[in-house]
Image (cartoon, rainbow, N blue to C red; front, side, top):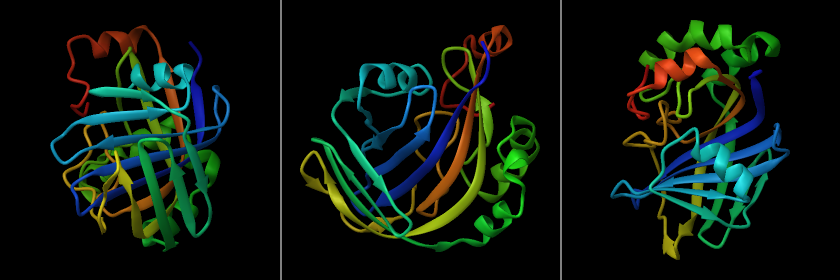
Length: 216
């Protein structure tokens, strides 16, 4: 199967309630444009909030969840703020300036930064510099994923609720989220990214018997 590419942004935040949230705002993908949210509660319960069965099926075949919710979800992502709303999740984020790593990412040509080759090269560095972060790895369903980050901005404030319970104040993404082989950076942030998903016989062989939450 040819590579599938997802262009968009990922917001990763923690909260003083212990809930961590990863929101995707995807503008160009094989599934069209959409938003989704992955929520891990303080006790480790992992929830996917997806807008359609098609989107949920693709994400669920790639990442691990304890619960999948099909809900209308709106993700409005702007330069200075994000608004996320579904029956389960209400989230408002304040986005700050570009981080030093973001300036380094911007210096790399987009075509290079978004390539699987580049993701493979920088993965050893990402493992050391950003705890819990991987730029390549083996996912579920015989898939290999490559994260090509092209920019990084800080998130400076959070307000919202999950299942009508207040999230509290902004906090680090700690412990790292356990949806797949990689978490978002520990510092709350918005990452511009091109995700490449490859499915082939070699990937399926690699996945056999593997723990989906263990980095490879």
